[in-house]
Image (cartoon, rainbow, N blue to C red; front, side, top):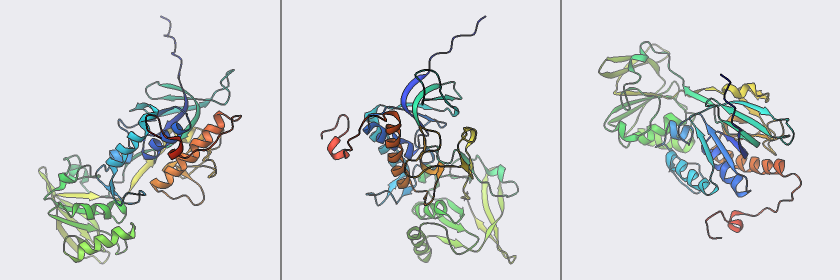
Amino acid sequence: MPNAPISPPLTTDVAIIGAGPVGLFAIFECGMLKLNCHVIDALDEVGGQLSALYPEKPIYDIPGYPAILAGELVSMLEAQSQPFAPTYHLGQQVTGLEAQDAPGKEGRWLLTTTKDTRIDAGAVIIAAGVGAFGPNRPPLDGIQAFEGMGPGQGVNYLVKRRDDFRDKKVVIAGGGDSAVDWAVSLSEVAESVKVVHRRPKFRAAPETVEKMKALADGGNVELVVPYQLAGLEGDADGLSAVQVADLDGNSRTLEADVLLPFFGLSQNIGPIAEWGLEIDHNHIIVEPGTMGAGPAGVYGVGDIITYPGKLKLILMGFSEAAVAAHSARDHLHPDEAYHFEHSTTAGVPGSAK
């Protein structure tokens, strides 16, 4: 029986790989330049890490918002992009990125996915965040027995709903932003919050560290420093305690209903490493003036990229998305002069100017 004919690929101006916050804003920036977008993401929902890992985590460095929940930011970015009618391909990973050389296709790219979706794009913006991600598991004997018990029980690697931890004895391990942010936030709902860190200095935003220390001074948070995780106690019904120890051999047993280890994410950029781009420690090297990732028409934005002076901030990713969109427009329409207009002048579809 002959093979079924292959359907022609979907066609778009720009293919955006990644539907996290920076990818969503790239849709808006492309839309303002009259470029249509198809967006591909391995997750089943938009928002990337913000949706998958901590939708109820407050973010404090978005201009104009003293604090905004991660999930709320995603909802607003999605709404901001909707006037431009992006096409989403969720729950699938881009596996192939190939330059096309057929007549009339010069300078265009063909993307293929794990669901056999094929997209013919004039430009590609890679906004893949940290790629495929998963938590770094602390090396504790028997930890697997306490994983998967459900939110607010045993060992959890993320907080999706603060209320799952209401009236719980919470032990947080780590010294970065996630550990400090959740210590501050969960202190409002948990019965107790203890933060275990191997040294007194925390690697988080100074303002949030000061909030946590003020809560510790007031007895709302206990800082267990300098200690490290040493063991877990409990049974099939749940976790009962976390053992910690310092370098001098001193040990403590902390009552606990749940342990939240925040030791960062393991990063795997997957097929991206095979696309002939210049990679440095799982990051795509780009030219900061254009966000160009090497091949003409391919750009990178957000946490997946690196260049001198790069900061891993959402607001910096938003700026990179704007630069990449303008570069994509120049690539697609090299002979057309562009008159830049601010959004207050140009407006957006369906809005009053």
